Length: 251
Image (tube, rainbow, N blue to C red; front, side):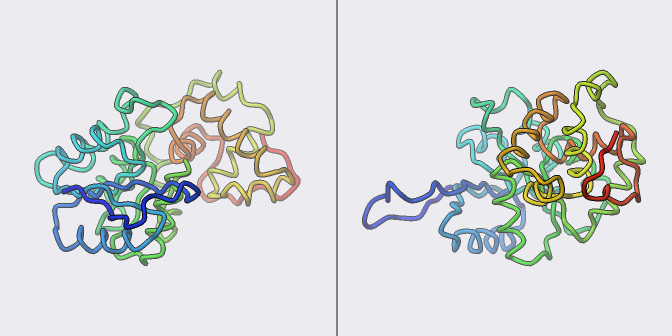
């Protein structure tokens, strides 16, 4: 089902462009509740709702939303396979605006969540999360960052580090990073957002964004979620270690 809010006075040319969201969940009540929550936000527009993974892929290809909120378990094509198709390099007609996928799950951590993140999802959160957290997650993904549910992020990172499967950058690609870029990557792996990185390294927000963009390009990573996996799986960051002290260098 596709829908949008009617406008009585026409669009405001000065209004910010809303984040366009596609919902994919086979439970009608859950899907409807999320749609009502997000549609109440003036800067989010739920452009469609679907009940299975195959429809999510088809509708996402037609509408190219900014974010797909994807139930990980659905009949037929599940959320993992749908995520893999939507995040494929050839899916979006605009490589600078890839469709982001936020995985929703009833369970804390299981194989489906790991598989979805490895398939290209930019984050996940539990279905019992606070409504405000879902809104924050949507905006976070829309601006190109990853969202990992803070309740279970430490466990998730430990599991990522213990699972060597998946593509890793060859050592030469890590060596392409400058010292500052390696510092930024380490802080990303520890869950720092851009403003926190800027404060930790005493640099500007715009400089951090530039570093992150260059790291993504050099490592061939899609988003920050993949950078976290790369940092842990390559051994650049060890599970259980604390972030570097402010003002120190890494690597």
